[in-house]
Image 1 (tube, rainbow, N blue to C red):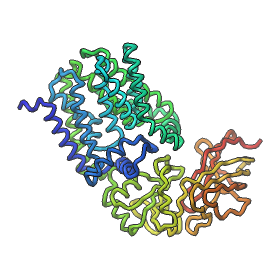
Image 2 (image 1 turned 120 degrees about the horizontal axis):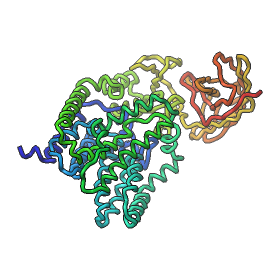
Image 3 (image 1 turned 45 degrees about the horizontal axis):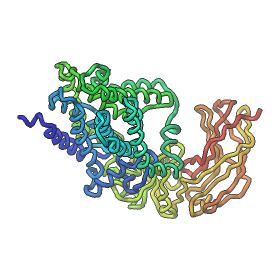
Image 4 (image 1 turned 90 degrees about the vertical axis):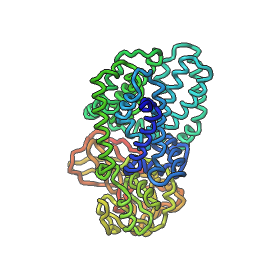
Amino acid sequence: MRYINSRYFWAIIIFAVNLLQALGTNLHDDEAYYWLFSKHLDWGYFDHPPMVALLIKASSSVFQGVLGVRFFAVVFITLLWLLINDLVNKKTATPWLAIGFLSLPVFNLYGFITTPDVPLLLFGACYLWLFRRFLNNKPYTWIFLGLCMALLAYSKYHGALIVFFSVFAIRSRKQLMQFVLAGLLALLLVMPHIAWQFQNHWPSLKYHFISRHRGFKWSYVFEYLLGLFAVPSVFFFWFTGKKNEDSSPNFNRLLHLIFWGFVGFFALMLLKGKVEIHWLAFATIPAFILFFNSNLANKKGIKAALVLQLAAIIGIRVWLAGWGDTEMESFKKDQNWAHEIENISQGYPVVFMNSFQKASKYEFYTGIVSWSDNNRFLRKNQFDLWKHDTTLYQQKIYYLNNYKVGAFVTDTVQGAYGGFIRKYLPMQRVEGFLQVYGLHLGKDTMSGTVGMEVHNPYNYPINMNHPQIPQRFYILVVSGGFYKSVRLDIMQDISVIPAQSHVFVTGTFSEPIADEISTEELKIFPLLMKGPLYGQILGPAVLKSPDK
Protein backbone atom coordinates (compact mmCIF):
# COMPACT_ATOMS: atom_id res chain seq x y z
CA MET A 1 0.00 0.00 0.00
CA ARG A 2 3.04 2.29 -0.22
CA TYR A 3 1.78 3.56 -3.56
CA ILE A 4 -1.08 5.32 -1.77
CA ASN A 5 1.45 7.84 -0.47
CA SER A 6 2.73 8.57 -3.96
CA ARG A 7 1.71 11.85 -5.59
CA TYR A 8 1.83 10.09 -8.95
CA PHE A 9 -0.69 7.48 -7.85
CA TRP A 10 -3.10 10.27 -6.98
CA ALA A 11 -2.25 12.04 -10.23
CA ILE A 12 -3.48 8.95 -12.09
CA ILE A 13 -6.67 8.93 -9.98
CA ILE A 14 -7.29 12.63 -10.64
CA PHE A 15 -6.62 12.22 -14.37
CA ALA A 16 -8.90 9.16 -14.69
CA VAL A 17 -11.79 10.67 -12.71
CA ASN A 18 -11.74 13.90 -14.69
CA LEU A 19 -11.37 12.08 -18.01
CA LEU A 20 -14.49 10.01 -17.29
CA GLN A 21 -16.38 13.13 -16.19
CA ALA A 22 -15.28 15.00 -19.32
CA LEU A 23 -16.54 12.21 -21.56
CA GLY A 24 -19.78 11.70 -19.64
CA THR A 25 -20.99 15.30 -19.25
CA ASN A 26 -22.61 17.47 -21.91
CA LEU A 27 -20.68 20.44 -23.21
CA HIS A 28 -21.16 23.70 -21.31
CA ASP A 29 -22.45 26.66 -23.35
CA ASP A 30 -19.28 28.69 -22.77
CA GLU A 31 -17.09 25.77 -23.86
CA ALA A 32 -18.81 25.77 -27.26
CA TYR A 33 -18.16 29.51 -27.51
CA TYR A 34 -14.45 28.95 -26.81
CA TRP A 35 -14.42 26.08 -29.31
CA LEU A 36 -15.67 28.53 -31.93
CA PHE A 37 -12.76 30.80 -30.95
CA SER A 38 -10.43 27.95 -31.86
CA LYS A 39 -11.95 27.76 -35.36
CA HIS A 40 -10.85 31.37 -35.90
CA LEU A 41 -7.47 31.70 -34.17
CA ASP A 42 -6.41 35.25 -33.42
CA TRP A 43 -4.25 37.18 -30.96
CA GLY A 44 -7.30 38.06 -28.89
CA TYR A 45 -11.06 37.84 -28.54
CA PHE A 46 -13.78 40.13 -27.26
CA ASP A 47 -14.02 38.44 -23.86
CA HIS A 48 -10.62 36.85 -23.31
CA PRO A 49 -7.00 36.45 -24.38
CA PRO A 50 -6.27 33.63 -26.87
CA MET A 51 -4.86 30.83 -24.68
CA VAL A 52 -8.13 28.93 -24.26
CA ALA A 53 -8.66 28.94 -28.05
CA LEU A 54 -5.11 27.71 -28.66
CA LEU A 55 -5.51 24.82 -26.20
CA ILE A 56 -8.79 23.71 -27.76
CA LYS A 57 -7.28 24.01 -31.25
CA ALA A 58 -4.41 21.73 -30.23
CA SER A 59 -6.57 19.10 -28.54
CA SER A 60 -9.31 19.09 -31.18
CA SER A 61 -6.70 18.38 -33.83
CA VAL A 62 -6.13 15.04 -32.08
CA PHE A 63 -9.46 14.20 -30.42
CA GLN A 64 -13.04 14.51 -31.65
CA GLY A 65 -16.17 15.71 -29.84
CA VAL A 66 -16.13 16.89 -26.23
CA LEU A 67 -12.68 15.43 -25.53
CA GLY A 68 -11.29 17.66 -28.25
CA VAL A 69 -12.51 20.60 -26.17
CA ARG A 70 -11.72 19.27 -22.71
CA PHE A 71 -8.52 17.26 -22.96
CA PHE A 72 -6.22 20.01 -21.71
CA ALA A 73 -8.49 20.73 -18.76
CA VAL A 74 -7.96 17.14 -17.64
CA VAL A 75 -4.20 17.37 -18.22
CA PHE A 76 -3.71 20.82 -16.68
CA ILE A 77 -5.53 20.05 -13.43
CA THR A 78 -3.41 16.90 -13.07
CA LEU A 79 -0.23 18.93 -13.56
CA LEU A 80 -1.60 21.46 -11.06
CA TRP A 81 -1.90 18.68 -8.49
CA LEU A 82 1.76 17.70 -9.00
CA LEU A 83 2.89 21.32 -8.80
CA ILE A 84 0.95 22.03 -5.61
CA ASN A 85 2.70 19.06 -4.01
CA ASP A 86 5.95 20.97 -4.43
CA LEU A 87 4.45 24.12 -2.93
CA VAL A 88 3.16 22.46 0.24
CA ASN A 89 5.67 21.76 3.03
CA LYS A 90 4.85 18.00 3.41
CA LYS A 91 3.40 18.23 6.92
CA THR A 92 0.29 16.47 5.69
CA ALA A 93 0.29 12.90 4.37
CA THR A 94 -0.26 12.71 0.62
CA PRO A 95 -3.65 10.91 0.84
CA TRP A 96 -5.07 13.73 2.97
CA LEU A 97 -3.58 16.31 0.66
CA ALA A 98 -5.31 14.51 -2.23
CA ILE A 99 -8.61 14.41 -0.34
CA GLY A 100 -8.33 18.14 0.25
CA PHE A 101 -7.56 18.73 -3.43
CA LEU A 102 -10.45 16.56 -4.61
CA SER A 103 -12.89 18.16 -2.17
CA LEU A 104 -12.50 21.66 -3.60
CA PRO A 105 -15.19 22.85 -6.06
CA VAL A 106 -12.68 24.81 -8.18
CA PHE A 107 -10.32 21.88 -8.75
CA ASN A 108 -13.26 19.65 -9.59
CA LEU A 109 -15.07 21.95 -12.00
CA TYR A 110 -11.97 22.98 -13.94
CA GLY A 111 -10.75 19.40 -14.05
CA PHE A 112 -13.17 18.61 -16.87
CA ILE A 113 -14.56 21.94 -18.16
CA THR A 114 -12.38 24.12 -20.37
CA THR A 115 -12.48 27.85 -19.68
CA PRO A 116 -9.75 30.52 -19.43
CA ASP A 117 -9.54 29.72 -15.70
CA VAL A 118 -7.89 26.37 -16.52
CA PRO A 119 -4.61 27.80 -17.89
CA LEU A 120 -4.81 30.62 -15.31
CA LEU A 121 -4.74 28.07 -12.49
CA LEU A 122 -1.81 26.09 -13.89
CA PHE A 123 0.34 29.00 -15.03
CA GLY A 124 -0.52 30.88 -11.84
CA ALA A 125 0.78 27.93 -9.79
CA CYS A 126 3.88 27.86 -12.01
CA TYR A 127 4.34 31.54 -11.22
CA LEU A 128 4.17 30.84 -7.47
CA TRP A 129 6.70 28.01 -7.83
CA LEU A 130 9.07 30.25 -9.78
CA PHE A 131 8.55 33.20 -7.45
CA ARG A 132 9.60 31.10 -4.47
CA ARG A 133 12.86 30.33 -6.30
CA PHE A 134 13.11 34.00 -7.20
CA LEU A 135 12.83 34.99 -3.52
CA ASN A 136 15.63 32.50 -2.77
CA ASN A 137 17.82 34.28 -5.36
CA LYS A 138 18.12 31.34 -7.75
CA PRO A 139 20.04 32.53 -10.84
CA TYR A 140 18.19 33.42 -14.05
CA THR A 141 14.80 32.74 -12.45
CA TRP A 142 13.61 36.18 -13.55
CA ILE A 143 13.72 35.06 -17.20
CA PHE A 144 11.32 32.18 -16.56
CA LEU A 145 9.25 34.46 -14.35
CA GLY A 146 8.84 36.83 -17.33
CA LEU A 147 7.80 33.94 -19.57
CA CYS A 148 5.24 32.88 -16.98
CA MET A 149 3.88 36.43 -16.73
CA ALA A 150 3.27 36.35 -20.48
CA LEU A 151 1.50 32.98 -20.22
CA LEU A 152 -0.74 34.43 -17.50
CA ALA A 153 -1.52 37.44 -19.69
CA TYR A 154 -2.46 35.18 -22.58
CA SER A 155 -4.66 33.05 -20.29
CA LYS A 156 -6.90 35.47 -18.43
CA TYR A 157 -6.65 39.13 -17.47
CA HIS A 158 -6.92 38.23 -13.78
CA GLY A 159 -3.32 37.08 -14.05
CA ALA A 160 -2.37 40.75 -13.73
CA LEU A 161 -3.57 40.65 -10.12
CA ILE A 162 -1.21 37.77 -9.32
CA VAL A 163 1.73 39.71 -10.73
CA PHE A 164 0.72 43.02 -9.12
CA PHE A 165 0.31 41.68 -5.59
CA SER A 166 3.55 39.71 -5.79
CA VAL A 167 5.50 42.98 -6.05
CA PHE A 168 4.84 43.60 -2.35
CA ALA A 169 6.62 40.37 -1.37
CA ILE A 170 9.95 41.55 -2.83
CA ARG A 171 12.49 42.44 -0.17
CA SER A 172 15.62 43.67 -1.99
CA ARG A 173 16.54 46.24 -4.62
CA LYS A 174 18.25 43.57 -6.74
CA GLN A 175 15.09 41.45 -6.80
CA LEU A 176 13.02 44.49 -7.69
CA MET A 177 15.27 45.29 -10.66
CA GLN A 178 15.11 41.69 -11.87
CA PHE A 179 11.34 41.73 -11.45
CA VAL A 180 11.14 44.86 -13.62
CA LEU A 181 13.23 43.07 -16.29
CA ALA A 182 10.86 40.10 -16.09
CA GLY A 183 7.92 42.45 -16.57
CA LEU A 184 9.55 44.07 -19.61
CA LEU A 185 10.17 40.63 -21.12
CA ALA A 186 6.52 39.71 -20.54
CA LEU A 187 5.40 43.02 -22.07
CA LEU A 188 7.46 42.31 -25.18
CA LEU A 189 5.93 38.84 -25.51
CA VAL A 190 2.39 40.17 -25.04
CA MET A 191 2.74 42.94 -27.64
CA PRO A 192 0.82 40.98 -30.34
CA HIS A 193 -2.21 40.84 -28.04
CA ILE A 194 -1.88 44.53 -27.14
CA ALA A 195 -1.68 45.34 -30.86
CA TRP A 196 -4.85 43.30 -31.45
CA GLN A 197 -6.64 45.22 -28.70
CA PHE A 198 -5.52 48.52 -30.23
CA GLN A 199 -6.64 47.53 -33.73
CA ASN A 200 -10.06 46.55 -32.41
CA HIS A 201 -10.47 49.65 -30.20
CA TRP A 202 -9.81 47.90 -26.86
CA PRO A 203 -13.01 45.79 -26.72
CA SER A 204 -11.96 43.67 -23.72
CA LEU A 205 -11.10 46.66 -21.54
CA LYS A 206 -14.31 48.45 -22.46
CA TYR A 207 -16.37 45.35 -21.72
CA HIS A 208 -14.76 44.26 -18.45
CA PHE A 209 -14.39 47.72 -16.90
CA ILE A 210 -17.34 49.66 -18.33
CA SER A 211 -20.18 48.01 -20.18
CA ARG A 212 -20.67 44.87 -18.08
CA HIS A 213 -21.22 46.77 -14.82
CA ARG A 214 -24.70 47.90 -13.83
CA GLY A 215 -24.17 49.59 -10.48
CA PHE A 216 -24.12 48.61 -6.83
CA LYS A 217 -26.73 46.31 -5.28
CA TRP A 218 -26.77 44.82 -1.79
CA SER A 219 -27.81 41.47 -3.24
CA TYR A 220 -24.46 41.35 -5.05
CA VAL A 221 -22.66 41.75 -1.72
CA PHE A 222 -24.52 38.81 -0.17
CA GLU A 223 -23.83 36.65 -3.23
CA TYR A 224 -20.15 37.57 -3.02
CA LEU A 225 -19.87 36.69 0.66
CA LEU A 226 -21.54 33.34 0.08
CA GLY A 227 -19.23 32.71 -2.85
CA LEU A 228 -16.16 33.33 -0.70
CA PHE A 229 -17.09 30.29 1.33
CA ALA A 230 -17.98 28.20 -1.71
CA VAL A 231 -15.02 28.79 -4.01
CA PRO A 232 -11.95 28.34 -1.79
CA SER A 233 -14.14 26.39 0.66
CA VAL A 234 -14.97 27.62 4.12
CA PHE A 235 -12.08 25.71 5.70
CA PHE A 236 -9.33 27.09 3.50
CA PHE A 237 -10.78 30.58 3.56
CA TRP A 238 -10.95 30.69 7.35
CA PHE A 239 -7.48 29.36 8.03
CA THR A 240 -5.55 31.53 5.59
CA GLY A 241 -5.38 34.05 8.43
CA LYS A 242 -3.95 31.48 10.85
CA LYS A 243 -0.24 31.24 11.59
CA ASN A 244 1.64 28.55 9.69
CA GLU A 245 5.20 27.28 10.03
CA ASP A 246 6.58 27.32 6.51
CA SER A 247 10.30 28.01 6.36
CA SER A 248 9.89 30.85 3.85
CA PRO A 249 8.19 33.86 5.47
CA ASN A 250 8.46 35.94 2.30
CA PHE A 251 6.71 33.22 0.31
CA ASN A 252 3.97 33.02 2.94
CA ARG A 253 3.63 36.78 2.66
CA LEU A 254 3.20 36.38 -1.10
CA LEU A 255 0.42 33.80 -0.61
CA HIS A 256 -1.43 36.05 1.83
CA LEU A 257 -1.02 39.06 -0.45
CA ILE A 258 -2.48 37.24 -3.43
CA PHE A 259 -5.37 35.67 -1.52
CA TRP A 260 -6.45 38.80 0.30
CA GLY A 261 -5.61 40.91 -2.74
CA PHE A 262 -8.09 38.94 -4.85
CA VAL A 263 -10.73 39.13 -2.12
CA GLY A 264 -10.24 42.86 -1.60
CA PHE A 265 -10.01 43.81 -5.27
CA PHE A 266 -13.25 42.10 -6.20
CA ALA A 267 -14.94 43.43 -3.07
CA LEU A 268 -14.18 46.92 -4.42
CA MET A 269 -15.52 45.88 -7.83
CA LEU A 270 -18.90 45.35 -6.13
CA LEU A 271 -19.25 49.13 -6.16
CA LYS A 272 -19.50 48.92 -9.97
CA GLY A 273 -21.74 45.88 -10.21
CA LYS A 274 -21.98 42.13 -9.87
CA VAL A 275 -18.85 40.03 -9.35
CA GLU A 276 -18.92 36.56 -10.86
CA ILE A 277 -17.77 34.23 -8.13
CA HIS A 278 -15.52 32.16 -10.41
CA TRP A 279 -13.30 35.26 -10.72
CA LEU A 280 -11.99 34.22 -7.30
CA ALA A 281 -10.97 30.79 -8.56
CA PHE A 282 -7.23 31.38 -8.38
CA ALA A 283 -7.48 32.51 -4.74
CA THR A 284 -8.11 28.84 -3.94
CA ILE A 285 -4.47 27.97 -4.61
CA PRO A 286 -2.75 30.24 -2.04
CA ALA A 287 -5.52 29.41 0.46
CA PHE A 288 -4.95 25.68 -0.12
CA ILE A 289 -1.17 25.96 0.35
CA LEU A 290 -1.44 28.09 3.49
CA PHE A 291 -3.96 25.72 4.98
CA PHE A 292 -1.88 22.60 4.43
CA ASN A 293 1.25 24.40 5.63
CA SER A 294 -0.45 24.78 9.01
CA ASN A 295 -0.92 22.13 11.67
CA LEU A 296 -4.68 22.59 11.47
CA ALA A 297 -4.83 20.30 8.42
CA ASN A 298 -3.95 17.32 10.63
CA LYS A 299 -6.69 17.83 13.21
CA LYS A 300 -9.33 15.09 13.29
CA GLY A 301 -12.27 17.46 13.08
CA ILE A 302 -10.85 19.10 9.96
CA LYS A 303 -10.16 15.73 8.35
CA ALA A 304 -13.75 14.67 9.02
CA ALA A 305 -15.00 17.89 7.44
CA LEU A 306 -12.84 17.29 4.35
CA VAL A 307 -14.25 13.77 3.97
CA LEU A 308 -17.81 15.13 4.20
CA GLN A 309 -17.04 17.79 1.62
CA LEU A 310 -15.51 15.19 -0.68
CA ALA A 311 -18.62 13.03 -0.33
CA ALA A 312 -20.78 16.00 -1.35
CA ILE A 313 -18.53 16.66 -4.37
CA ILE A 314 -18.78 13.01 -5.45
CA GLY A 315 -22.56 13.20 -5.21
CA ILE A 316 -22.63 16.35 -7.37
CA ARG A 317 -20.32 14.75 -9.94
CA VAL A 318 -22.50 11.64 -10.20
CA TRP A 319 -25.66 13.74 -10.49
CA LEU A 320 -24.11 15.93 -13.19
CA ALA A 321 -22.94 12.99 -15.29
CA GLY A 322 -26.15 11.04 -14.76
CA TRP A 323 -28.96 13.49 -15.34
CA GLY A 324 -27.96 16.91 -14.02
CA ASP A 325 -26.47 17.99 -17.34
CA THR A 326 -29.87 17.53 -18.98
CA GLU A 327 -31.54 19.77 -16.40
CA MET A 328 -29.07 22.65 -16.08
CA GLU A 329 -29.67 25.27 -18.78
CA SER A 330 -25.99 25.76 -19.59
CA PHE A 331 -25.44 22.03 -20.19
CA LYS A 332 -28.69 20.66 -21.59
CA LYS A 333 -28.43 21.88 -25.20
CA ASP A 334 -27.00 18.65 -26.63
CA GLN A 335 -26.92 16.72 -29.90
CA ASN A 336 -30.66 16.05 -29.79
CA TRP A 337 -31.33 19.78 -29.44
CA ALA A 338 -29.05 20.60 -32.36
CA HIS A 339 -30.35 17.85 -34.64
CA GLU A 340 -33.97 18.87 -34.10
CA ILE A 341 -33.12 22.37 -35.32
CA GLU A 342 -31.04 20.92 -38.16
CA ASN A 343 -33.99 18.85 -39.39
CA ILE A 344 -36.38 21.81 -39.38
CA SER A 345 -33.85 24.15 -40.99
CA GLN A 346 -33.13 21.56 -43.70
CA GLY A 347 -29.39 22.03 -43.32
CA TYR A 348 -29.39 25.74 -44.17
CA PRO A 349 -27.31 28.13 -42.04
CA VAL A 350 -29.07 29.05 -38.80
CA VAL A 351 -29.10 32.55 -37.31
CA PHE A 352 -30.06 32.81 -33.63
CA MET A 353 -31.38 36.00 -32.13
CA ASN A 354 -29.26 37.11 -29.18
CA SER A 355 -27.43 33.90 -28.33
CA PHE A 356 -23.74 33.45 -28.95
CA GLN A 357 -23.93 30.26 -26.84
CA LYS A 358 -26.68 28.68 -28.96
CA ALA A 359 -24.98 29.66 -32.21
CA SER A 360 -21.70 28.18 -30.96
CA LYS A 361 -23.27 24.95 -29.72
CA TYR A 362 -25.28 24.44 -32.87
CA GLU A 363 -22.18 24.75 -35.04
CA PHE A 364 -20.24 22.44 -32.69
CA TYR A 365 -22.78 19.63 -32.91
CA THR A 366 -23.73 19.97 -36.59
CA GLY A 367 -20.77 21.56 -38.33
CA ILE A 368 -23.21 23.90 -40.10
CA VAL A 369 -22.47 27.63 -40.21
CA SER A 370 -24.35 29.50 -37.50
CA TRP A 371 -24.53 33.10 -36.34
CA SER A 372 -25.72 35.18 -33.38
CA ASP A 373 -27.69 38.26 -34.46
CA ASN A 374 -27.19 40.56 -31.46
CA ASN A 375 -29.43 43.44 -30.42
CA ARG A 376 -29.60 45.87 -27.53
CA PHE A 377 -30.88 43.22 -25.12
CA LEU A 378 -27.66 41.18 -25.34
CA ARG A 379 -24.20 42.20 -24.24
CA LYS A 380 -21.62 42.57 -26.97
CA ASN A 381 -19.50 39.51 -27.69
CA GLN A 382 -17.14 38.03 -30.25
CA PHE A 383 -19.88 37.90 -32.89
CA ASP A 384 -19.79 41.71 -32.87
CA LEU A 385 -16.14 41.59 -33.96
CA TRP A 386 -16.13 38.72 -36.44
CA LYS A 387 -16.91 39.63 -40.02
CA HIS A 388 -17.75 36.25 -41.53
CA ASP A 389 -21.47 37.02 -41.27
CA THR A 390 -20.96 38.55 -44.73
CA THR A 391 -20.81 35.00 -46.12
CA LEU A 392 -24.56 34.81 -45.36
CA TYR A 393 -25.43 37.86 -47.49
CA GLN A 394 -28.31 37.12 -49.87
CA GLN A 395 -28.32 33.47 -48.76
CA LYS A 396 -31.33 31.52 -47.63
CA ILE A 397 -31.07 31.07 -43.87
CA TYR A 398 -33.22 29.81 -41.03
CA TYR A 399 -33.82 32.47 -38.39
CA LEU A 400 -34.69 31.55 -34.79
CA ASN A 401 -36.50 34.46 -33.16
CA ASN A 402 -37.24 34.92 -29.46
CA TYR A 403 -40.66 36.35 -30.28
CA LYS A 404 -43.51 35.10 -32.43
CA VAL A 405 -43.42 38.04 -34.82
CA GLY A 406 -42.74 38.29 -38.52
CA ALA A 407 -44.45 36.78 -41.54
CA PHE A 408 -41.49 34.42 -42.04
CA VAL A 409 -42.16 32.61 -38.72
CA THR A 410 -43.65 29.18 -39.41
CA ASP A 411 -42.28 26.92 -36.66
CA THR A 412 -41.96 26.61 -32.92
CA VAL A 413 -38.76 24.80 -32.01
CA GLN A 414 -36.95 24.44 -28.69
CA GLY A 415 -38.78 27.38 -27.13
CA ALA A 416 -38.08 29.73 -30.04
CA TYR A 417 -39.91 30.75 -33.21
CA GLY A 418 -38.30 30.06 -36.55
CA GLY A 419 -38.69 30.44 -40.25
CA PHE A 420 -36.77 30.93 -43.48
CA ILE A 421 -35.51 34.28 -44.72
CA ARG A 422 -34.84 33.91 -48.42
CA LYS A 423 -32.20 36.63 -48.88
CA TYR A 424 -30.63 37.37 -45.53
CA LEU A 425 -29.19 40.81 -44.89
CA PRO A 426 -26.37 40.84 -42.26
CA MET A 427 -25.99 44.34 -40.86
CA GLN A 428 -24.72 43.93 -37.32
CA ARG A 429 -21.88 46.42 -37.76
CA VAL A 430 -23.94 49.29 -39.18
CA GLU A 431 -23.25 52.37 -37.02
CA GLY A 432 -25.16 55.57 -36.34
CA PHE A 433 -24.62 58.88 -34.56
CA LEU A 434 -27.42 61.09 -33.32
CA GLN A 435 -28.05 64.80 -33.02
CA VAL A 436 -31.11 65.89 -31.08
CA TYR A 437 -32.36 69.27 -32.26
CA GLY A 438 -35.39 69.48 -29.99
CA LEU A 439 -37.17 67.42 -27.36
CA HIS A 440 -40.50 68.37 -25.81
CA LEU A 441 -42.41 66.57 -23.08
CA GLY A 442 -46.10 67.37 -22.98
CA LYS A 443 -48.66 66.09 -20.56
CA ASP A 444 -49.12 62.82 -22.42
CA THR A 445 -46.87 63.10 -25.48
CA MET A 446 -43.19 63.25 -26.30
CA SER A 447 -42.09 64.98 -29.52
CA GLY A 448 -38.98 66.33 -31.17
CA THR A 449 -36.62 66.45 -34.13
CA VAL A 450 -33.41 64.49 -34.60
CA GLY A 451 -30.66 64.08 -37.17
CA MET A 452 -28.98 60.71 -37.65
CA GLU A 453 -25.80 59.87 -39.54
CA VAL A 454 -25.71 56.20 -40.53
CA HIS A 455 -22.59 54.42 -41.73
CA ASN A 456 -22.72 51.18 -43.73
CA PRO A 457 -19.27 49.50 -43.46
CA TYR A 458 -20.24 46.47 -45.57
CA ASN A 459 -19.26 45.98 -49.20
CA TYR A 460 -22.91 45.59 -50.15
CA PRO A 461 -25.87 48.00 -49.94
CA ILE A 462 -28.44 47.91 -47.15
CA ASN A 463 -31.87 47.52 -48.73
CA MET A 464 -34.23 49.50 -46.50
CA ASN A 465 -37.24 47.85 -48.22
CA HIS A 466 -36.22 44.23 -47.83
CA PRO A 467 -39.35 42.14 -48.51
CA GLN A 468 -39.11 40.16 -45.24
CA ILE A 469 -37.10 42.44 -42.94
CA PRO A 470 -37.62 46.08 -43.99
CA GLN A 471 -35.49 48.61 -42.09
CA ARG A 472 -36.96 51.63 -40.29
CA PHE A 473 -35.26 54.49 -38.42
CA TYR A 474 -36.14 54.78 -34.73
CA ILE A 475 -34.76 56.25 -31.54
CA LEU A 476 -34.63 54.58 -28.13
CA VAL A 477 -35.51 56.87 -25.21
CA VAL A 478 -34.25 55.77 -21.78
CA SER A 479 -35.05 57.36 -18.44
CA GLY A 480 -34.43 55.25 -15.35
CA GLY A 481 -36.59 52.18 -15.85
CA PHE A 482 -38.44 53.75 -18.77
CA TYR A 483 -37.62 52.41 -22.26
CA LYS A 484 -39.45 53.52 -25.37
CA SER A 485 -38.69 52.76 -29.04
CA VAL A 486 -40.04 55.64 -31.12
CA ARG A 487 -40.38 55.58 -34.90
CA LEU A 488 -39.09 58.59 -36.83
CA ASP A 489 -40.92 60.25 -39.69
CA ILE A 490 -38.00 60.66 -42.08
CA MET A 491 -37.96 63.76 -44.27
CA GLN A 492 -35.72 62.21 -46.94
CA ASP A 493 -36.52 59.30 -49.24
CA ILE A 494 -33.96 56.68 -48.19
CA SER A 495 -34.50 53.30 -49.84
CA VAL A 496 -30.87 52.13 -49.87
CA ILE A 497 -27.75 52.83 -47.84
CA PRO A 498 -24.97 52.34 -50.39
CA ALA A 499 -22.01 50.07 -49.66
CA GLN A 500 -19.24 51.59 -47.52
CA SER A 501 -20.92 54.98 -47.34
CA HIS A 502 -22.72 57.42 -45.03
CA VAL A 503 -26.23 58.82 -45.21
CA PHE A 504 -27.69 61.59 -43.09
CA VAL A 505 -31.39 61.60 -42.29
CA THR A 506 -33.59 64.03 -40.42
CA GLY A 507 -36.71 62.85 -38.65
CA THR A 508 -39.48 64.05 -36.41
CA PHE A 509 -41.51 62.14 -33.86
CA SER A 510 -44.56 62.51 -31.69
CA GLU A 511 -45.27 59.64 -29.34
CA PRO A 512 -47.92 59.08 -26.65
CA ILE A 513 -46.40 58.30 -23.24
CA ALA A 514 -48.35 56.64 -20.51
CA ASP A 515 -45.40 56.13 -18.15
CA GLU A 516 -43.83 58.82 -16.05
CA ILE A 517 -40.39 59.81 -17.30
CA SER A 518 -37.84 62.18 -15.87
CA THR A 519 -37.95 65.84 -16.79
CA GLU A 520 -34.17 65.89 -16.34
CA GLU A 521 -31.68 64.43 -18.83
CA LEU A 522 -32.85 61.56 -21.05
CA LYS A 523 -30.64 59.07 -22.87
CA ILE A 524 -31.53 58.87 -26.56
CA PHE A 525 -29.96 56.19 -28.76
CA PRO A 526 -30.00 55.89 -32.57
CA LEU A 527 -31.96 52.76 -33.44
CA LEU A 528 -32.59 50.78 -36.58
CA MET A 529 -35.67 48.57 -36.45
CA LYS A 530 -34.90 45.43 -38.44
CA GLY A 531 -38.35 44.53 -39.69
CA PRO A 532 -40.21 42.37 -37.18
CA LEU A 533 -37.01 41.22 -35.49
CA TYR A 534 -35.78 43.92 -33.12
CA GLY A 535 -34.21 47.33 -32.77
CA GLN A 536 -30.46 47.47 -33.27
CA ILE A 537 -28.69 50.24 -31.37
CA LEU A 538 -26.35 51.92 -33.83
CA GLY A 539 -24.20 54.04 -31.56
CA PRO A 540 -23.75 55.94 -28.29
CA ALA A 541 -26.52 57.75 -26.49
CA VAL A 542 -27.07 61.49 -26.57
CA LEU A 543 -27.97 63.11 -23.24
CA LYS A 544 -30.75 65.62 -23.73
CA SER A 545 -32.90 67.64 -21.36
CA PRO A 546 -36.47 68.38 -22.50
CA ASP A 547 -37.09 71.90 -23.75
CA LYS A 548 -38.61 74.16 -21.13
